[in-house]
Amino acid sequence: MKIDNLVFELTQACNQSCRFCYNYWRDGSTPLPGPDPVLARKTLKKLLSQTSVGTLAFSGGEPLLIPNIHDLALYARFKGCRVNVLTNGTLLTQDAVDNFKHIGLSAIQIPILSADPAVHDTLTNLPGSWRKATAAASMVVQAMPREACSVLVITRENAPGITETLELIKKLGISQVMVNRFNLGGMGLKNKSSLTLDRDTLKKAFADTESFAAANPGIRFVSGVCTPICVMDPAPYPHIRFTWCSTDFSRRPVAVSYTGDVRFCNHSPHIIGNIHQRSISDILTDPVNIGRYATVPDHCRDCSLFPRCNGGCRAASEQVYGSFNLPDPVVEVSLLRSEATKAASAASPFPAAPEGMGVTFKEVAKGLDVL
Image 1 (tube, one colour):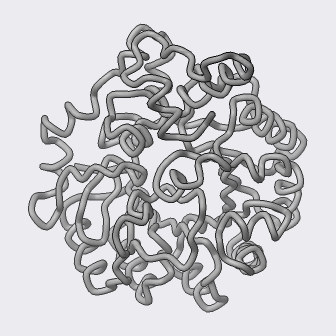
Image 2 (spheres, helix red, strand yellow):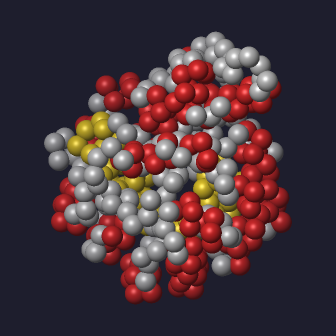
């Protein structure tokens, strides 16, 4: 079985505590284990003995906390993988960049969250992270200009400065930008009230990005967090390539942790198997696992747009609702905010749930603090 895209989580540890972090293990419920480079290497070798992978993305946590990451990247390259590294940039050194260049990495992704250092550092919970991230991005651009990629996570706090942030990214010489909306999960659940975007703010942020993209055709823009089309139609933003997740395991970015746990994606909290116990092919072709992710939410059942967006990020639904069989929480959040604005002076702050929803607005409002 060949897997087109796979996210390999080298560690759960991280030197930042980003307030928007989607990692399900960053909910504060349990202490995080330290990096285990020996187990990470063992698991990677096991994985690549079981399947061929087109693009392998090293993620975490913070993957640069693994001291042998260059050895692992080289091993993956020898196995025929394109290799990307998703890092916060604060631990990146010139020697590391040079090694990555010689290994032949396809991309190094570094978050640039704002042109304002204070906003960036507030979002990462690490003073000085903006300075280190921008310096790291500059190093990558100098050594590997075509492989440098910035990630901009749009939240309510940094959305007003989108254009200035994109100007900074352009000044750094980066020609690939991933623009993702804040997606509920992990640490983000604790900070949902301050970070969650209403629909108008979301659309304005993408309109600002579209205007910038149209004026700068040398920079490629991609939105990697699938958003339900009923919340935001991508048609007004033709210079941004929007992606949506397939439920076909062979065509989607499956996640494998350094312990061997396999999940639908790196946003999903649900473990569907472990490659040290069963082959990844057996796990991904298991009818139970296929059936779990082949469902259509009741809310989306009669929607002609569902085949395109699949109800948005339903791994976020797994984190918020505990079920994949509900649409992306952004559907209800956007409706709640819209209704709350209209009914701000009404006696009851909780409008009725739309027909077909599996949970009530009152339950969601209570859980997400959106009202």
